[in-house]
Length: 162
Length: 182
Image 1: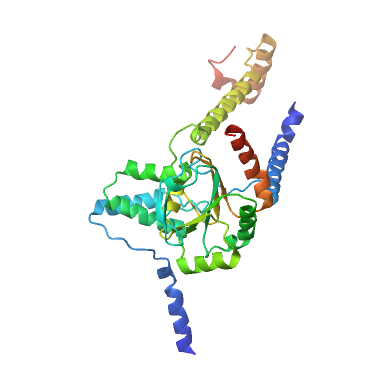
Image 2 (image 1 turned 180 degrees about the vertical axis):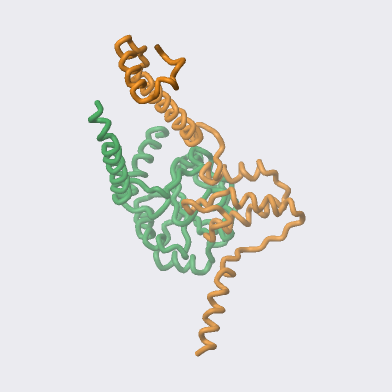
């Protein structure tokens, strides 16, 4: 019985190892870094929100293989990005390039922020306008003086309003 | 004025509810698929290829007939393709030219499939490595492309073709193609 439990526990321990995907050979560290950067930044076209490194779908495997081949063939980052966009559109880039189709995506947050600031400024200016400061007239001033002199000893307010 | 302001959050909430239910409804009826992407090849030439056919001959882009045709990406490992196949056979009987692309598959089961279920394709490219699929921007099978007489990709449909999809999406495209080049 104990053995079985132990075996089961070992099986569970081995679970993370299932997640290991293909291993590719690189000549230089730079190539490896570029590969790792690309699989983080490129999106799996089949999935809604997974990058190539996180997806085990067939298309992601193909794209990782293609990416590796292109890096080993000495293609530049721009060439690789263009290759992917030519086939899968801007969707494949997690940071899409700025063009007519993606303008809303890039500009909307800034627009919303500016809109919010404008509304906030409008509300703030209204609030200050609603409590206008009016100078006290003589009657008010007399009432204020009598209130103050009731609470405080006259000796302490020697140089006060008279 | 202040009374309307009081109800503003509720109004916004109701508008959002209406939008979400509207989208959900369109997903259910199949009018809208959030996973479907427009092809990056839209209005661009069909990619160059030179690949063997399932029957062992070779076929390249230049050898394709100079008329509009469908390109259907399929595979024996794809369950939706099973569902779709009878409709493709029906289309072929109606005279629709369909080029098959057997995507990342093995030759024997593919030939067996066509022998058993009927062969709706005038030719089937055997894309064992998925290279044509990659150039086409295929994300999975089945996918169907509409290519015009000049070899330009006009439309891509992801998922199973059936009569409803044909009538709603392909038929209007085709009639506009035929109007443009009678």
